Image (cartoon, rainbow, N blue to C red; front, side):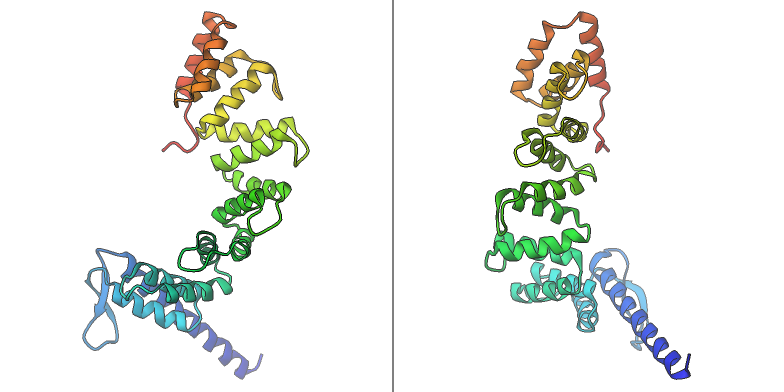
Length: 284
């Protein structure tokens, strides 16, 4: 490797470090309410002297953003959206969000998708919303994956496609997201747009139910009561139906009363004990 190439690589490394430091300094000004920075006097170093300073955050975000740092561009957009440290300016916010999104920042891509979907700060455009949701979703942004699934179900900005919706809901559901599990279970349950799969529908209803989703708990209770996709088990049926009933699901209340007539006192007591011991996955 030539000396010239080594010097070039060293220069690139130094530039990267400087940009990273600028973003870190800006982020501390933006987030830290107890320890932020001020000049020591000669302007060469920073000390732990001053509280949260949005104008300083904007200054340093801008320096880094203008050098092409995507995270700084996104944060500068946030400052313009919220009018912190700078006059509120939605056009500037969208401009910086777009710059970050075009560089592949998934959070910026998701936020652009939200803007175009809602018509917030830009003209509503479902096609653009799908475009940015897709880019973010492909990078694993869970919120974008969920919203993209919803757009495929409704045919907003894209041809209605339940198989694609199921694909994206499944990705979200794997993160134990109750609404996504429930929506995916409904798609499998209907079997109209994807191959009906008893084990699949039970799996996703269970995941949603285990996170406390009352609708999924009620349906899972019905599965156990009827032996639909699972062995018939009145104790499990009562447990899940009771959990849904405790969340004021009126249909579950009525169905639980019907189960009472099919069970022994011992079975009911066991089911009530299981319901009492139940803790949803997302419980703190």
